[in-house]
Image (tube, rainbow, N blue to C red; front, top):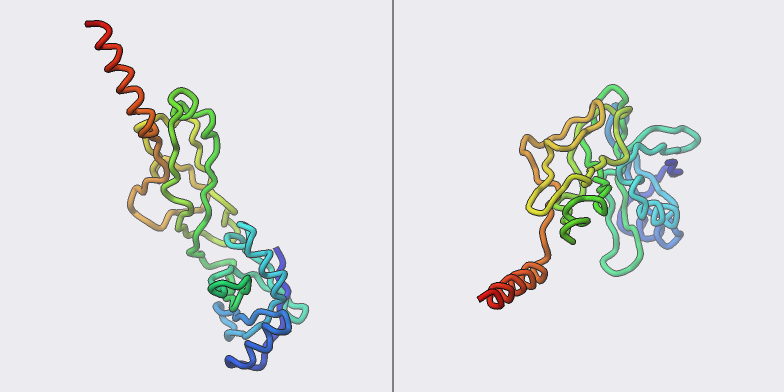
Length: 202
């Protein structure tokens, strides 16, 4: 994805307020060997880009004065109640240096899992993203979590995931990623049915 930005010379609260009134969002680019650079980005383009998952987890092409450099979205601030992005931070990416970033998890095949198909169970997504390190060229847009073999009472852990080549999870813990349970109401209903059957058998 491409982001077009402009150098920003004026700084301070007043300058930022004027930028926002003009439909732009103040920001900064930092990292790498170059000095941090204050920038401005079109607010509407940024606002809509932030709604896309890939904008948060992909390497972006940031164009400033016709020069393009690769960056990652690192932080952004939004107004407490207005649809307004107040500030955005990008970090430069060095192709030879490993990144430390979060990658979203995509859960697939829940509908064919024994938990759902046979037991009308509920699958809970315990984690939504994973902290990883990798070279920029290996950064995945997402990591897939296959739920097709998950049954009630079982869980999927970090060790069960197949991470893409060159991608390493940061944590040493075997995190729980997803669990499958039978709804509480259903357990109660089955218990009552069993109790009723036992009464009739007497």
